[in-house]
Structure formats: C-alpha cells, structure tokens
Image 1 (cartoon, rainbow, N blue to C red):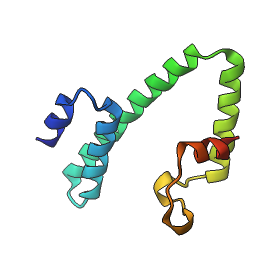
Image 2: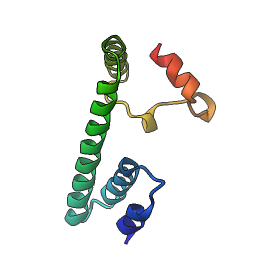
Image 3: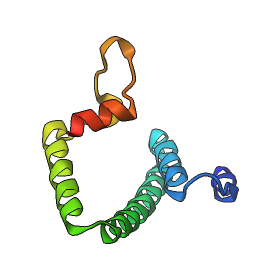
Length: 105
C-alpha cells in the first residue's frame, strides 16, 4: 500500500521513495520479511543512483569529472562511515547547501 502511493507520485524522484521504503522496512527489521524488503529497496536505490551517477559523469568534461572524483574521495576520507544523520551540528543547526559546498572546497 505504501509502495503504491510512492509509485504514483510523479513529483518524487524514484530513488527518494526507494530509500524511504528501505528505511521504513529496516526500522521494522525484527521481522525477517521486513529485512528482505529493506535489502530489496536499498539495492534498487543503489542501482538507480549508480545509473544517475554514470549519466552525470558522461555529461561532465574530463577535467571536471577528475576534480569531482578527487573531492568526493577527500570527503569520504574525512567522514569515513559517518552519514549525514549522525554528523554533529553546533547548537542543532542544519547544514545548508552553501556550507556543504564550502566543506568540499
């Protein structure tokens, strides 16, 4: 039922609803069936993200792609295993796109 509602929403990118479904099922992982569904949705989202990443890479000039890959690698190295939800933000502030860009510079 929840999946059908997300599928009907044309304004929501596919990867968003796939991740929401995966997280919803994972939160209820005490049931092995939910763990299976979580894995399926995470896998589907990962496939979609990979396709989108490849499209972006093909559209970029090689110099820009090299720079983007280097900056992404630096970011991963600095944050090793730290997801956005677990990063501490001073006084409960949320990062902005501007601050995210500055941290990648």
